[in-house]
Structures are given as structure tokens and as C-alpha cells.
Amino acid sequence: EDQVTQSPEALRLQEGESSSLNCSYTVSGLRGLFWYRQDPGKGPEFLFTLYSAGEEKEKERLKATLTKKESFLHITAPKPEDSATYLCAVQAPGSARQLTFGSGTQLTVLP
Amino acid sequence: DAEITQSPRHKITETGRQVTLACHQTWNHNNMFWYRQDLGHGLRLIHYSYGVHDTNKGEVSDGYSVSRSNTEDLPLTLESAASSQTSVYFCASSPGTSGRFNEQFFGPGTRLTVL
Image 1: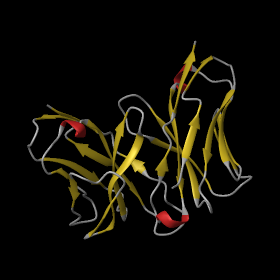
Image 2: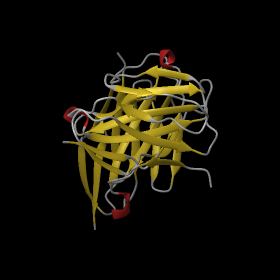
Image 3: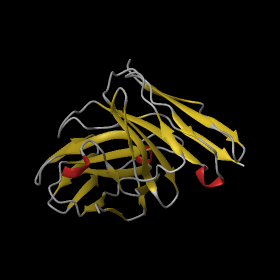
């Protein structure tokens, strides 16, 4: 069974304090790894897709990286508006167009 | 702008009643999905569809059904609502037909309470 584990479950940072969120997976033959941001009371918002080990993508203060067993979401000099739950999801070869989601990391950035 | 909408946004119902949650997307995406989100479980797939008249069961499909009569809509029906089905429900769609372009785009969610 495909497993997606995110850590930590919750993270509190001071504004400007850079850190990383982890998403580890046990899928063989990964077809894609997806990062989403979810604000309270809203649906997940798509951030990035990564397809192969070594790939990196950036958007503002966020950078996502991918290895063969995990992905990191690096947050550089975060601001309070970056506070949200960050979800990762994987697409495995046998699951066609379905995604398997992790439980998320709840990020709080304090001013 | 193209979008995905869900209705109602909030619903309170009683045990045993039939409930239908609507999902409508204007992106002309082939693929549509229903998830439920509960504390400690993340997003779990209920049903999904890869096109008109196609439906498939997901991880937690018991007690739910869907039908796809056009590209835009995938209504989710709870045949006889149970308290265990109290949750937040999200609809999503994606354009892909193969390995890439499978980013899913989510609606705003429906909060369902079964009393």
C-alpha cells in the first residue's frame, strides 16, 4: 500500500525563521509528487508538481525539492501570511490519475 | 474564469436521510474526484470519475454513490446518512489522461453534519 508521511505534524516559526517540511513516500515508480496549501475553511490550493529526483520548483518564499524517497518544502524568511496547512500527495503507477495524500503539516508563522 | 463550485457549503441533516452534494466545474476536465477530510485522516478518496458515465470506488466508498451524466457535474449522494459521515467534503477535478497534467484543483468544500 502506498504510504505518504508528512513531518512535523505542526511547526511554529518566528517571522523570518527559515525551515523545511518533509514528505516521505514509499511509492515505487513515482509518477508525480504534488504540494498543496490549505487555509482554514478552504479547499487545498495547488502549489507544485515534481516528477523526478533532483527536480526543484520555486514560488515566492517556497521551494520544493524531490529525492527518490522524500520531498522537502523549504520556506525561506516566512511571513505570517504563509501560515497554513501544507499537504503533499503522490501519484503511483498503478493508480492512474488518483492521488494519495499525507495528513499535512500545520505551519504557524508568528509576527 | 473557470472554476469549481460546491453546494451547499453547509448542511445539517438527520440520520437515515438521503443527501446529495453538488459539484460543478467549468474547466471541461475529464477527471473528477470526491474526498472527505477528517482530523487525523487527511484527505480520503470516496469516488472518482474519468469521464461521462464512468464512476469508480475509492478508499472509503461505503454508503456513498456518484453518477456522471455530463462533463461538468459529479454529484455525491449519501444514501442513508450516518453520524460517521459527518465530515468536510471536497470535490476536485484534473485534466490529465496520462502521467502528467494530473494536478487536481479543489472546490471550497461542503461541511456536512449528520445528527
